[in-house]
Image (tube, rainbow, N blue to C red; front, side, top):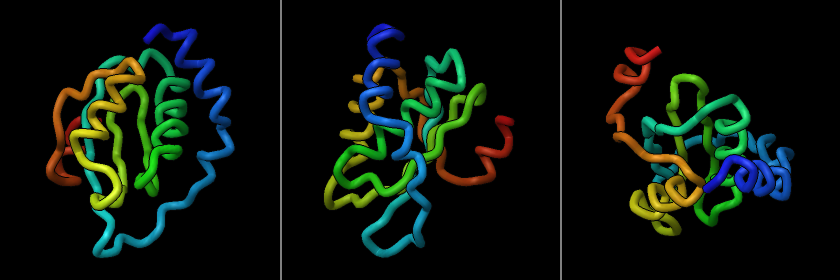
Length: 109
């Protein structure tokens, strides 16, 4: 996806959706953390969060630039790891790998 199309999508989605607060993790909530390639600015990270939070089953997301780390809390009964990866790809980014824990995230900063 071209950068201009991505910016148009996030503008249409509205950055106000970023105000969603992270709730407590329940039995129906899982957290995945990915390294994502393709962020060229903070708008990419903020925009991806806005678009992810519009997806059915996604409860919360936080993306970081320039680290390229995306953490997503989601309901696995409503959306899967594969669907999240596919969606991120459709937004013009590449999921490089999945982290298994917080310790690995700290090492990349």
